[in-house]
Length: 108
Image 1 (cartoon, rainbow, N blue to C red):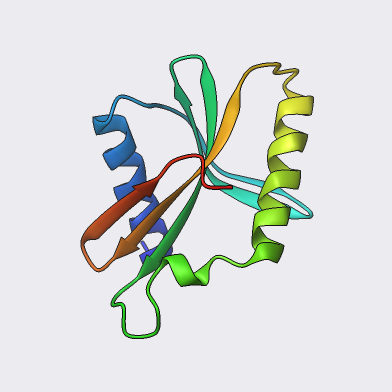
Image 2: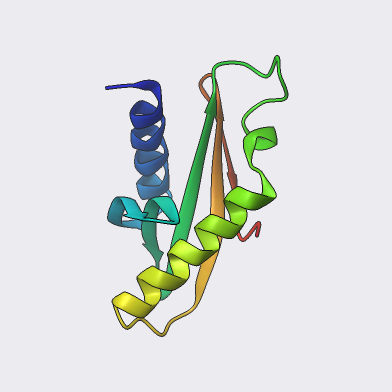
């Protein structure tokens, strides 16, 4: 298991402990990927997982670019359309710096 896969497993476990329900991991489209798709009651949650072993170069949050946000939004729209989902949704980020986990809800 590489660092990215380990970080996604940490994020999934953390979110499940917070009461979210796992749906799918690494949903890929030609224009983008969603790391985790979860459910929080009636809402669909599209989660981007960012991992850095330390904060030396700005930490996990600084690794999220506007182009990446755009690709995640497109991928989420495709997922919702393909699965004919008409429900509230939000975009969360799980930022992992070493063993420290930050959960930012509805951040883009």
